[in-house]
Length: 140
Ligand code: ATP
Ligand code: MG
View 1 (cartoon, protein in one colour):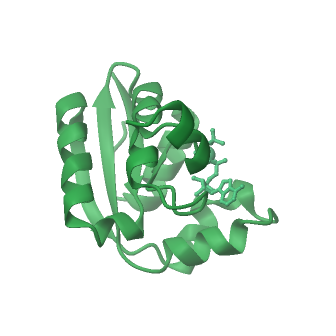
View 2: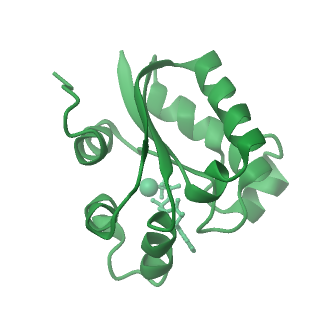
């Protein structure tokens, strides 16, 4: 069965209700193989977001991700990558609000950077990202 990496972004951890709602949604949809609160240091965010280096939002994004603890989870289900991305909704919060008002980003996103959560976009990305945030996890 497929695994993916979910990361709940810092502003959501400061919102107990939002965090609990998202955790419940996750438990209803996936088997959680591992989970932890993680402080994403500058070194970790530079590795994690390497594909975005040089983009106009890169500094904003990495600074935000370093600004407080995140919550990272390894999720397993059939087609978990697509399933989690569907639950998150569109990257851009204004689009999420207009097209899928019940998705996580519409409900708890604040801006294109503070869009509540992250999800791997492919099996290769999932393995790479899990290796960065859960170096001790044995993906087999
Ligand atoms: P996909 O991987 O399909 O493009 P994604 O939701 O993973 O979708 P990315 O494009 O990979 O989004 O961007 C990574 C993160 O960078 C986003 O989750 C968001 O926080 C931030 N980001 C992306 N585009 C913008 C933007 N235009 N302005 C500000 N932040 C952005
Ligand atoms: Mg992406």
